[in-house]
Image 1 (tube, rainbow, N blue to C red):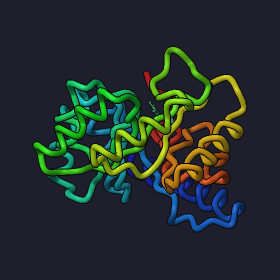
Image 2: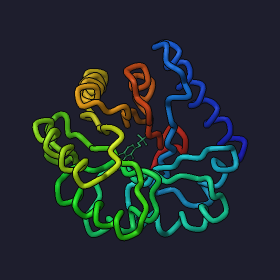
Image 3: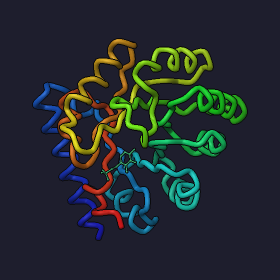
Image 4: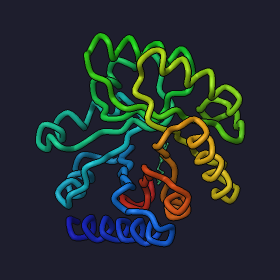
Length: 221
Ligand SMILES: *Cc1c(COP(=O)(O)O)cnc(C)c1O
């Protein structure tokens, strides 16, 4: 179990490094987020033991069930909340998270700003962009990005970059390139993009945060 986790982690880390080399990037610029949604604390522990520090969850309630104990035991573990976030979960999200990758609408900006003021902690934030205007997906429309970014900065949210989940059935690289261009246009250095099937393409195009679940943990039930 532990050996398997170590081997998978080493494999993904090596693939990230090779992709970064190809693009003449420093692999240290890329953070591997191990997406642990649906996984139990027992499945997560071997990865922590193997040295993995950044983990991603998409449901606040699920994260609250397993992460407090893991974080008590390993204070340097960092939790990233990825994907859609309900405004009424903003306070719990701010309390737990090192980073929030799903800022996508003005009401959430307001809720997060209130929560950060109240708790006195400011996790870094990524604005999620719905590049292909997919109705079932979170993220702001490309056209709404300038106004949302302005509101977020006025509300003192520490916005560090953009995040996307490209359409599942299309070649991802053009979407990654579009997100990278938008980030450059708006002077943001963070790019949260790339998942199990496409993280190497994402790294070649400039990803700073890849979110990898199944390639590390196996298929989800
Ligand atoms: C589940 C999830 C991932 C990880 O997906 P895998 O294909 O398992 O690597 C990445 N990002 C988001 C937003 C997710 O919800």
